[in-house]
Length: 386
Image (cartoon, rainbow, N blue to C red):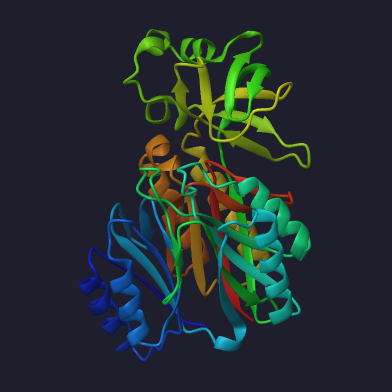
């Protein structure tokens, strides 16, 4: 399989980039498209349709390819993969449950290929502007398709507005659903890993009062006061203009141990509910749950990610044909230029064209762990035609 990554600030840029790509005796059949909600994605899909290129698309919180990272633009990975090696499913959730849709995806994948693997992108927020339930999706999809089956991906973004996301093909789109790129794993191998890098800070804490996504108390003390005071922002407790997500949570989320593995789950305060005097979390904090405050990774995270990727690449014994990266939207503000370095480092390890985007959540396997939903992770997957 041959692949090329392209990018642009407008549909016209993409038109020119495709023309340049195919001039090099390259006939792509498939495009993975990561695009800002402010771009005209219909125009882009129409351009791709002119070249008979299938589309697997998701909106982003920023996008990148080899040598270029942007916000508000678009990044595409073009592949000339044989069409009997893959299929694309788009599933609208609508009035259905995530469990029902996950079972439908699993049944379709298993019907098409005896041994399927998948790239999965969900929408990132619901029509009610709640974060999509990535935990339930991954649990249900993994159970329905079989825990030995491999899938990677992420939740679509919307330039960090939390107003509305989309996944799409060249003729379908949904603001509440899934798009799935199903591969015949006997013809295309997927190798990848999810790594967060956030580290525990201080002693463990305990959730002593919560209700749904509202966290009221930690170790018997008001959660808002404890979180702000611990991080030196106690005076902001009465400031309703204080943006806890941008100012603190991107850098200092909570670390929770998973029951099913040695892997961790990151949970983040999204805002302060001043009427309830509670932290509004991105995921439910269960009463009695143990967690830690955290600090973001330092430069060693780049080395860890590239070292682990190098081990996988060396075990495989060859370069990848293409590389996709799903990186949490929180990594960019927390890590700054390290995010670019880790993405470029992965492309260098696998010696392949790369495309990726900043997500609202990631799907994949951490080292020695089962399939999981992640937050704040760098989740990468290398594609190699057999």
